[in-house]
Image (cartoon, rainbow, N blue to C red; front, side, top):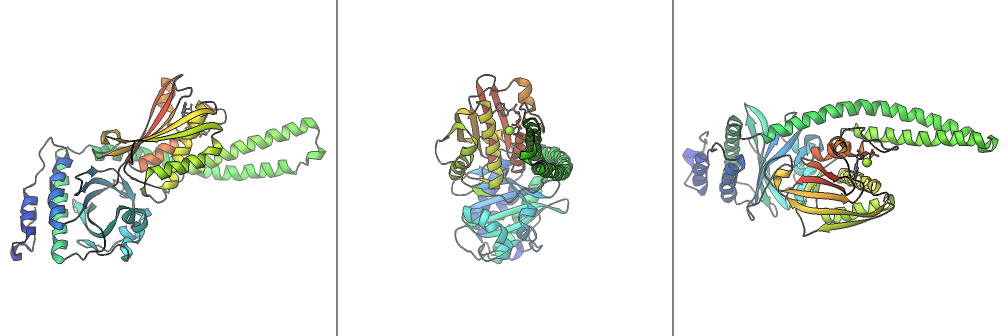
Amino acid sequence: MNTPAWSGRSHGTHFDAALNALAQIHHVSGDPPQVTLYELARIVTEALNIERFSVWCATEDRRAIRLYFLYRRSTGAVSDGSILRKEDFPSYFRAPEGRTITIDDVTTDPVAADLLEPYLAPLGIGALLDAPIYSEGAPSGMVCHEHVGGPRTWSDEERLFAGVVADNISRLLEEFLRQRAEQNLRVYQRELQVLDRLEAMGRMAAGIAHDFRNLLNIVLANAELLGEDDLTPGQRVYVNDIRSAVAHGTNLAQELMHFGRDVAGRPSVQSLRPFLEQVSRLAAPSLGDCSIEIRQEREVSRVLIDRPELERVLLNLLINARDAMGGRGTIRIEVTQASGDRKSTGIGRAVCIAVVDSGIGMDADTRLRVFEPFFTSKPEGTGLGLAVARQIITRAGGTIEVESTPGVGTAMHVFLPVID
Ligand SMILES: Nc1ncnc2c1ncn2[C@@H]1O[C@H](COP(=O)(O)OP(=O)(O)OP(=O)(O)O)[C@@H](O)[C@H]1O
Ligand SMILES: [Mg+2]
């Protein structure tokens, strides 16, 4: 650990004891990194008298930070895996460089402006003391000391302490990587690379789809110009065929354009119960004679995701369930707490949203291919519904899995990291 410049002139405050304790922490080979961070988080939250302590690491492409570890002092609970993209929160990510980002009052500080409504306010965070972490000299993430409650004036001593905590985290992260304790970060980065390749393909497809849709509009406009009255009954059938083919093509073009879209919208902290009730209402007109039953044992934790994007995922899953059940029956949405190993990252907690139908199910070959773009078994399908769903969920740090038995039904499981 770097010896803090101010240690020589400190006056035996409780920070001295905390600093000594921090310096003693080393990663024990074989332990999960979280065990070591847990110990550190307890010391830091105690010393600063804060409720939340979190470590965020930059993704390899540096376009986002991923929650590596979050500790809540009052409950001792740990979370991880949520993702914040830099382009969604420019005011925070463009904060002036320095040893710490000090925000005494999140409601008035311009640096917190983008984060306030979607993130800080729902979590009750009133003041922030953040410090960047470095890997091989380059910024590689952020350590956040979050005060729950109203504003708070951070003292110079607290700011210096936060900087030393960040130094310790940088040192520990290097130890984890050196000891190969941290495979999750790498696995996640590989997934993002696959996603990037898919996106490049999607962008190309979206470009073509855009022009294609314009051409279809011309075809449609001309078909409309053939006045109904001048046509023989036989010719009318041809014109109707043109119209329905154009409608199908336009739908396909629209799906493709969404698939190629690179903007993830803006994630915010979401409670699932009211969200799912709203999605059920929204979906009802498209579900024919299917009804939805929501099952949630008790209030589960919140998640960090762009609301319209999660709506899109749920709608795709519900419509697939409807199709599988031939347009009638009950679709169940089940929300449960899941253990963290079911999501792509780490050991923090996850929420599982399962959409369960009693439809035709899938054979092994279909199960393997459902997330493949353009894979469809439906005459009017685009095969993009689940590809888009997986794209959205992966971006939010989660995973989506299929469980299905032919003739019995299908359960689609969406796992999302818990944020609160
Ligand atoms: N709940 C389900 N039950 C049975 N098969 C399913 C279910 N969900 C998806 N599938 C299978 O996976 C395929 C791909 O689904 P996906 O949602 O990606 O595309 P699609 O529904 O065919 O078309 P669209 O782009 O209109 O959604 C489906 O064609 C179907 O064969
Ligand atoms: Mg579909």
